Each structure stands twice: as C-alpha cells, then as structure tokens.
Length: 118
Length: 117
Image 1 (cartoon, chains in turn purple, red):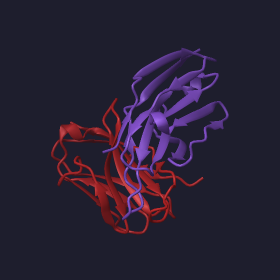
Image 2 (cartoon, chains in turn cyan, red):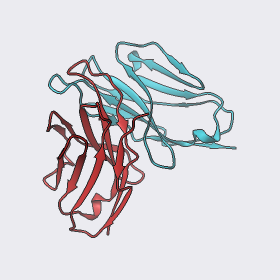
Image 3 (cartoon, each protein chain N blue to C red):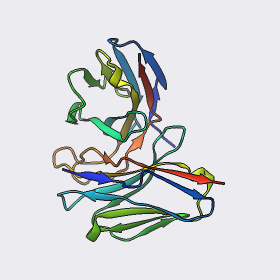
C-alpha cells in the first residue's frame, strides 16, 4: 500500500529564511507520481508540482525547488527567502497508475503547517 | 484559466438529512474525484469516477455516499443521511488524460464545507 509521511507537523520561520519541508513516501510500484499542494488559509488546494518516478532531476521554479531522491524515497520541498504569503499548509501526495483507469487516487501526507513571521 | 467550481461553499445541515454537493469539473477532463478533509487533518480520498462509473473508492465511501454525473457538466456527491462525523471540507477534483499514460495534474475546486449539527 502507498503511504506518504510528512514528519514535520509545523514549522515557523522568519521572513527571508530558507525552509525545507520533508516528504517520505512508500510504494510498491516502480512507476508513480509525486505532488506538492499548497493549502492557504482560505482553504483551497493549489497545485505546485508533479514529478514522475523516472525523472529524478531536481526542479526549481522561482523561490521553490524540489529534491527528488529515489534512493531514500524522499521528495523534499525548499522555499528560498520565505515570505509571509508562503504561510500555508503544504501537502505532499503520491499516485500510482492503474492499468484499468489510468490513475489511482492521490494519497496525501498529513501536511506541514508553515508559518512565516514578518 | 479553466477551473473546477463547487457549490455550495458552505452548507449547514441537521444530522440525518440528505446533502448534495455539486461540482462542475473542467470541461475536457475525463476523471473526476471527491476528497474530504476533516478540520485540521489530512486530505482523504473518497471516490474516483471515469467513463460514467466509479473506478475506485475508499473505505470511507460507504453506502451512505453516492456520486452521479447527471448531465455533461455536473458531478455530484450525495450523502444520504448525514452524521456528525461527516462534517468536513469536501473537495472535487478533475484531471484529463488517457489510460495508463495519464500524468496530468489534478485540479481541485475550492471546496464545500459541510457542517452537520
């Protein structure tokens, strides 16, 4: 069965600090997809990134970067020079493809609440 | 930019009442989902729907729940007889893609908050 662990329940940083959110996953499949979603105080889920298991290249998007390490089953998310607007709950999620329907449901981690203080 | 829309944004109901939550997925998407999030907890999968039938459901999705795509645009979640523990934020989501090679992102709606009294 698939499982996603976000061991950090809550992180508090001061603006402009860098912060890394950890995500460790378990899956029996060799093909799978990893995601990060942001949930701001308003409640919606905002897609940040999708990565498939065959692509271990790290990705950078502005102040966001992701480090995918298959060897340690981790997909960590770093925010550089954090801002108050980054305050949110961040969820890591995992999905495996299903032969019949194309996709299995997302399994979410329990989320990490990030508080960025001014 | 196309988006998934959900109504109502907030519904308050009495225990035992039926509730229908509505979603309009993105128009060219083929896969539809409901997830829920009890306050302060993780987002949990309820059900996925493809080709006019349920393709996968979780243990949470018991006989009290049903989904329907009554027309070409709406995707509904019905809770037949609500319980206190059904209070949660319910998220609808959709994605495009084809069999096996699906890699598309999941687009979530803004959620419908259900409060059962």
